[in-house]
Image (cartoon, rainbow, N blue to C red):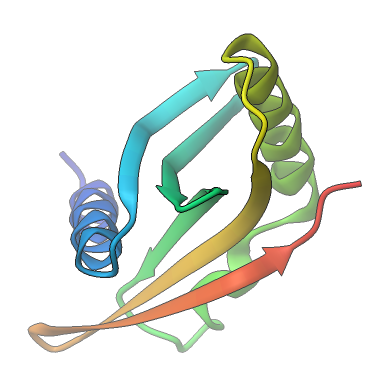
Length: 119
């Protein structure tokens, strides 16, 4: 497996651990619909948090969250609409980004709540 794939998997696991420590319940991981993949679907009280995880080994080319593009957001919103509809959920949906940057052997985790909005 390529190093960036391993880093991505490590980042997703760090994000799950971070969310669990902060009282979120993990509902689903790597939920796929159409061309979208939702990294983590988590719940905190009556909020369904849709989490996009971005992990980078350096910030030389920008912060991890800068790599979430409009087309990806569009696909995520479509996937989450499907998820909520199919599961008959009546919850508030929030889109978050967990940005993880590797610094030597350490990882910096930043949780950006309401990182983008759906229309």
